[in-house]
Length: 348
Image 1 (cartoon, rainbow, N blue to C red):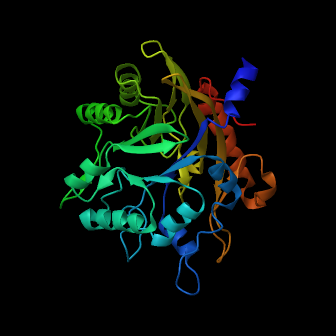
Image 2 (cartoon, helix red, strand yellow):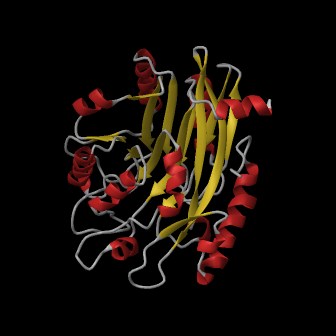
């Protein structure tokens, strides 16, 4: 079995995917990125994990801040510099998710501007649309990777009570809508279904009932292959679950936590990256090789230094003043959360 698994993982026909959590921009992050020339530089933020991102044939992150233009701002109404999205693209991400509770922070003008900026970069995005007609043209998002046709779908529980105005469309979690989108994707020839969800309760280390029941429905009733969750800002458990009804393994990730942020609670000081490979066995997708990797957000200690993501195991990159927080985040994530994983081990 081990040799079989390794051969699948190393197969040139396997599609390798990487997912990370909430890519945020709080005010201190924006300030740290500002250069003396008035531009914003994020080039050092992701240096130490770029190899993990580029390992994938397709890498996905949740863009949890509109590109709403100036004045830039953090919580509670985000608007990040365009350079932030530029750097995410340069660092190797292939898809940015935009359906989340902050997507309407700058109202419909900010949501529209976010879409236009990403379009101008040639950066694929999913979850918000400038109009209903645009949504009809873009959903489901079909991506051909090594001859396998993937469908990506993205939904959020809400928009912090901010009305969705203008012509903008935000994909909200609604079972009838999701089922219709999945049916459309299958009709269009999708072989692998990936559903990305902004759900759950912030700072809860375990999934709540609404997450569990929706995941069960997606797996057993809708036959999806990958469920990737965000929003709680902390890591929640992952599992590879076998569906008897569909005769296949499904990767379920309740929350990947923060990708990068200025949050202070110890459990939100970092996040997880999940890697997984997908092959075809006849006409059925084979999801295999799922594993996770943790990373810590090291905040700047002086003016001119930026936020930096440090992967677990790179203790040499941790400053002495950050070591206690780094160790506490890693220990709590492993002991309180990821010890409950089912068949999703730590990457060695």
